[in-house]
Amino acid sequence: MKKNHAVITADMVNSTIFTREKTTEWLSEMIDLLRENPAFDWALKPEIYRGDSFQGVLKNSNEAMHAAILARASMRAHAKNTDLRVAIGIGKTEQLTDRAGTSDGEAFRLSGHLADNIRKQKARIGIALPTPSEPLSATLDLLETLIENWTTSQSEVIVALLLKKNINQISEQLGISQPAASQRVASSKWWAIENFLATFPKHLSLYTKQKS
Image (cartoon, rainbow, N blue to C red):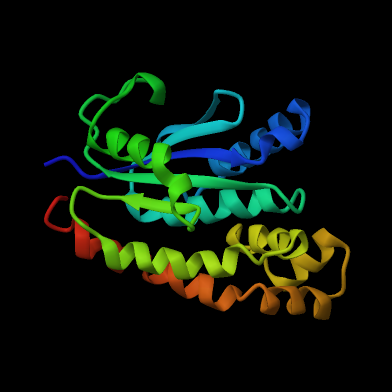
């Protein structure tokens, strides 16, 4: 039986207030982070489409939340008003070609429908599953209360942490003291994000284990 894939469809928030050169640069930088990170096993690597959007397909749906949070933190690290809306569709991919735009299947349809409607919800990360998943959606609302308050400096730290950097490496990378780096980690509530990511596969299995 085919495993579930995770189709990630995302678009940049407030892209019109920045130059096209800036949005392209920031999106390209973020997509490189996603493509090159060994934590992700891509069936189709993310690629930009329509200028301020991207789509990619993960073979392992358990990795989807890690990718979504990394993408948002990377974008939010650039400027105060930058962010992403991320629509994750989890299900089968009946037709998987060499490009997301020409592929099809349950996961693509779920992600596409959610991407069209995500502006109606407060959380900027959404998950669409073949079965009802309101408790998981409620958890994403709580996650949003953390992410929406990250400053650009805190977002930089979150990116580094998601890339498995330690405090010493973060302080060297950002040119700040280790106590200052530790303070940013604490103020970003990394402990809660780390715990959420560690338990996300268990949350997800409650809705997908019979579909896998």
